[in-house]
Amino acid sequence: MGREAIRQSLANAQEVQGQHTSEAGPCPVVPLGHLDGKFYILDAVGQLRALSARQMGTRDELMALFLDEGMWLTAAFPCKRQQKTTEADGSESTRWEVVDFVKNKASAWLMAECRAAGLFGDHILIRKPGVWPSQEGAPVVHCGDRVLGLAKRPKPAGTRHGNQIWAAAPPAPRPGDPCSAAVGEELEAKIGRLWNFRRAGGQVVLVGLLGCAYFGASIPWRPAGFIIGAAGSGKSSIMAVLSAACPMHFYTNDTTKAGLEQSLDGRAMPTYVDEAADREDQRGARALLDLVLSAAGGEGTKGSRGGKEGKARQIEVAGSILMASISPPDMQAQHLGRFTIVDLDKAHEGVDYHNEHKELQDWARQHGAGLWARALSGWKEWRGAFAAFRDALKVCGCAPREMDQLGALLAGWWVLTHEGVPEALEADRGIELISDYIRDSDDVLTQDSSSRMMNHLFSQLVQVQRSTDRRSLAELVRTVLKKPVYNEENIDGLTRVIASEVLANYGIRVIQADDLSKDRRGRSAPRAADGLGLWFWPGSSPLRSLFRDTPYSGQKFEYELRRLESARPFKGQIRIGAVKARGCIWVSGEELGFGDEADDG
Image (tube, rainbow, N blue to C red; front, side):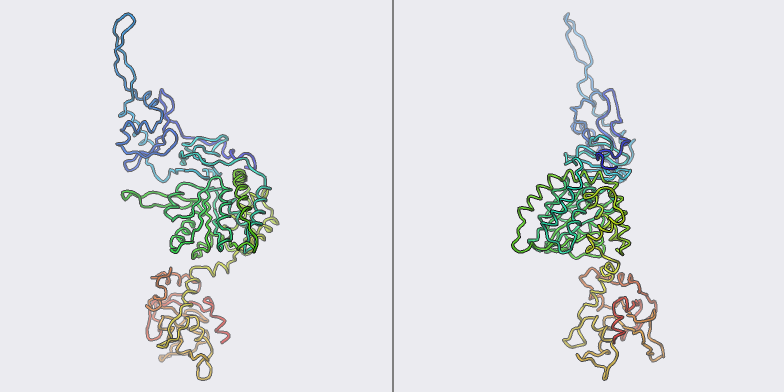
């Protein structure tokens, strides 16, 4: 699409509006269909209305649909009455005059048209204000009363394009004329000067998040961000600057997941949530993170929620979301793949940028419409930059999911601060700017849910026999792995035998790599693979109790245990302490991080 006016994205868009005509001209309303006794219609100004049969037969409801004082209805379904008049010569005559419309005929006609339109369902997409992808994928800006991008000229709300209906809403801000790349560069420089980032490249990340936010739901991957920092680091100020740079956005500093869904339902626009995790109850913050998981990619969050009278309502949330708090809630691996965390530090001692922050907010508000237009007019450049940065990230060993997140983020930064599509060397330079934010496969592995579960398990302190001594399970495993010394006792008094017995009480048995011992029947130590390994018995009540009130309670820890790469379930019996247990799972000691202890002794 180049840098020409953003309104030239689909020159040949076809509308479906005003198809129903009469002697009065095109019908001002658009019947869309029916479902469960409700009739769905776009009224005269493009608002979506759902009416029952009783409402359809009410004169006031029909007048409210057409919003023209019944002029079209009167012309299409006239109600005539005889009127006696006195002529000039004194004679009386009778003639028919239109005095109203026949509501029963109008209602029956509307019902018939809704029936002809078919059943109203999820295949019909109701678009509210925001930036949405057209059927061809190009960004379309719904500004409430106008739709930009469906054709050369703005279209009125109420336009239907294929299965998308751009429902009318109060007027919303519009993009302006595209600004130059110098404006984006100036914003990046000012953010870098007025805030302290613990990791280099924070200003690039924030400008990239802003660039992607301008596209709403029209890009395939919508990166989310989380700004953290102590009090006085300027979190709220930077949120105010970024939201001021977005003419169309949603901002809140006190919300819940349900409230956010209701506020954003059907609206694809940047969302800023301040103090997202600064609550004593962290469950709400984690629920917000889960909302972002699906809003970040594909078609966004789509689902059903309970409604009035037990009827479900459909919700749809899409677009980039930026949150801020003193510290983020506990994030799982799936959250870290969609959030880029920007850590702010306090300003240097004696430095106060309060006034400069306010001035930058005004500057961002002044240039926001131009930056928005620049991003939209560079939609094709964004796609090319996304592919270039993603390829470069792959070469440097970035984890696959991180390539989508950081590739989209860098593409958003590029379209605001550069021209064209980055060459290979330019892509490498962009990656160098945010190198501190790149996680490789090993970093991602440590954040994996199964790895986090094992870290939790081996950090648990358990009582050693009947004493008051408490040791971590990891320490007990290392004790078992140590080579025996004279009288088989460590300096601290914990023997390998005692450590094995305590582990057995929690359904864990350690099998050393060089274990050649045999039981009374002459059987070798049970193993599912060569080398060091641990047997886990998921049915052990003490083991299950270690996961109580955690994300791995119930049978979830067993599921995560089975997801480990070296996990090998065993159908037979394995002796663990005094118990012959079934359903045990073998896991390599090397994968659990105990390989070095076995070698060192």
